[in-house]
Image 1 (cartoon, rainbow over the protein chains, first blue to last red):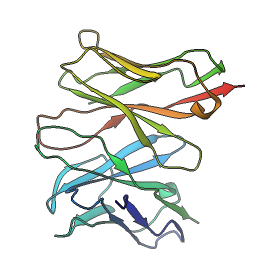
Image 2: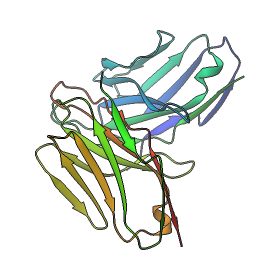
Image 3: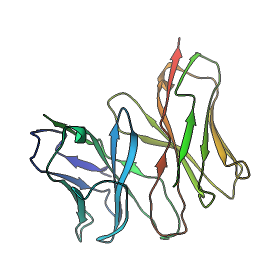
Length: 116
Length: 114
């Protein structure tokens, strides 16, 4: 069974540019969440999607956005990149049979974004 | 807002010793508490989790305890081995609102020396 696949693995962008990251969850998983990991701030929640709907959003500026497609694949976009956006962006999928029950995430390997 | 505090930030033990990592959460509605292990350059991996209707859970050398009254939970690793060296994250989540957001602690770097 394939794991969570994130592409690309590495990205270098210039300030002011925009970037799109992709995440393919484990087959059958309908919930996809995105996290930003930095040495200083740890793992910070960005947003969560379930059946193409954003169910929750973290405390990030509107430059950070995302979406989920009908096949559960998800993308996140960051516009007008800033140096502080340099981080490891992790996608995680889970299979909530019951929407009110949490199940453990399976994380992807992440996309390391460097903004110069 | 929700907050999870994790201690210690670093922990050094000798091989064979036990290691304990403690977390405190602020949201009394939290009912799901997973622990993740992240080795250098790798993705976080779920190692054990516990729900609020259970006080303790064990899986071989690892165990987690939960004190709902005090709002804290702990990870216990016995007979530590060098391959246990990694960063460990605790997290808390509420499951009754239909979303999967986890609030993570800041991580504990565990170093097991041979």
